[in-house]
Structures are given as structure tokens and as C-alpha cells.
Amino acid sequence: MARHGKSDSRVPTVIVDDVHIVYRVHGAGSGKGSATSALSRIISKKRSPSIREVHAVRGISFTAYKGEAVGLIGSNGSGKSTMLAAIAGLLPTERGGIYTNGQPSLLGVNAALMNDLTGDRNVILGCLAMGMSPEEVKSRYQEIVDFSGINEKGDFISLPMRTYSSGMAARLRFSIAAAKTHEVLLIDEALATGDQKFQKRSEARIRELRGEAGTVFLVSHNNNAIRDTCERTIWIEKGELIMDGLTDEVVKEYEKANRA
Ligand SMILES: Nc1ncnc2c1ncn2[C@@H]1O[C@H](COP(=O)(O)OP(=O)(O)OP(=O)(O)O)[C@@H](O)[C@H]1O
Image (cartoon, rainbow, N blue to C red; front, side, top):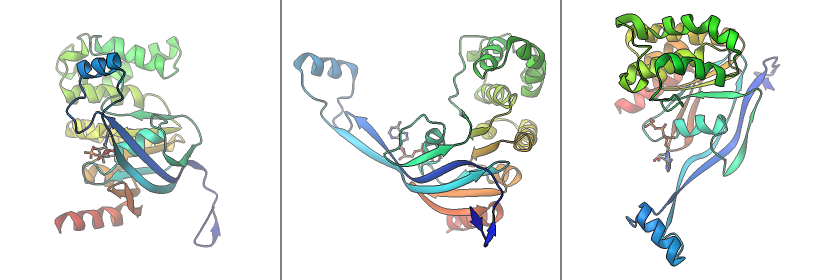
């Protein structure tokens, strides 16, 4: 790939090529999306009353490279989380293609940890699920718990996760995911929920993860976190790409548009 007329030795990790993503919402608008109405439709063999389409991503294209941290910004409902989920392979594209070099891991607010299990069980299960060996989990365990800071105010790691505040749960999720080097790490608002000290720690870890080879995507409404972590930023509105460039320039334009 060439930029400024020079040959480009960077290694592409994610190629998003004219991607469109459409959600289909069943039973929308009629107020009959309940389980009982679905059951009665099955019995009476009637079709679903209506399917509404939400065209969440409309023709977005970009390429991300090894060693890059890319911020995704835009107002509520602009399509950022949808874009991340699609890169992670969790949503099909309606049109266009997404090509990734390596397995992307999505670390979102809904990342699957088990609420009824204790924090320490979740650390172990999460690490095993990411492909670590039991020995590796054992050797990384304390580091993960310390990074999360969950035990700073007492022995919380031995309590079920449902007793955690949303910030504590997000910190643990981030700490588990960040324990492994990911080829493509997708982070959805993970930093927003932690306190300032944790935010600084996770920003430093994101920089390390980038250095360790991978590409990091960060969705956030916290422009300072984006500034501190990503040198490149993509701004999306209404499912369309508005700007893709150096973070300082893109965030400046975004803030200007928001003030207006
Ligand atoms: N599961 C879903 N079913 C139907 N529509 C959805 C679903 N998830 C998101 N949408 C719609 O897709 C559009 C983009 O949503 P998305 O969550 O990607 O936005 P976002 O930029 O991440 O927003 P926020 O900043 O509020 O998190 C919105 O119009 C939203 O209503």
C-alpha cells in the first residue's frame, strides 16, 4: 500500500472494505414482540408482524496496521460498537468485507464473565478461555488481580462478581483481557468506567500491548483517553466515516462540531 508516493512497509492487520451492517428487529413497532405473542404466532402459524431494519454502518472503509492504536469516536448511536463487533466477527456484514490478520478479541462492557462466580474463578476461566495453559494462568493470576486493583479495599476477589460495582467489574474484565498479547484487541469503553488511577494504568498497558505487536481499537467518549492512547482516530456519525487521521486533528474537529 502506498502513502505519500512512498512504498509502505507497514503490515495491515484489519481491512474494512465498504462495510454495511443492518440490524433486523423483529416485532418492532407493533408492540407484540413478547414471548406470548411469539408463541401464539407459532400456534396460529402466522408470520412475524413486522421486521424493522436499522442500517447501523453505511459504507465504512479503512485499514489498520500492526503497532497502531486506533480510536473510534462519534455521538451516541453512531455505529462505533457495531463496527467493533463486526471486526470481532460477531456481526455479519450486509455488504462489503472485513479481513483480519490474526484473531480479534473484543473486550466490551458485556464481555462474558459469570456474575455468580467469584472474581478469582472468573480470572481463571477467562484466562483459560483466552487459550492460556493452566500453568500460565497460575503464574499470571496474582499479576492480573493486582492490576485490577479489586483487592485494594479488602478481599473482594473471593466474592461473586454480582457484588461488584460496574467500575470494578469493568476493571477485572480489562485486566483479564490485557494479560494476554492480542493480535487485534478491540476495547469498547473499558476505560470509561475505571477511576483515574486505573485509567492511567490501563492506558499504559494499551501502549505496551501495541508495542507487543498487536493493533488496538478503542471506542470511547472520553476524548482525553483517546488522545493519551491513540495516535490515529476514526470519527463515525450515522454509520458513516466522517474523518480518519491523526488523533489531535480528528478530535479537534469532533469537539468543534460538538460545540457548534
Ligand atoms: N442489537 C441491536 N438491534 C437493533 N439495532 C441496534 C442494535 N444495536 C445497535 N443498534 C442500532 O445501531 C445503531 C448504532 O448503534 P451502536 O451501538 O453501534 O452505536 P455507538 O456509536 O456504539 O453508540 P454509543 O456511543 O451510544 O455506545 C443505533 O441506531 C442503534 O440503535
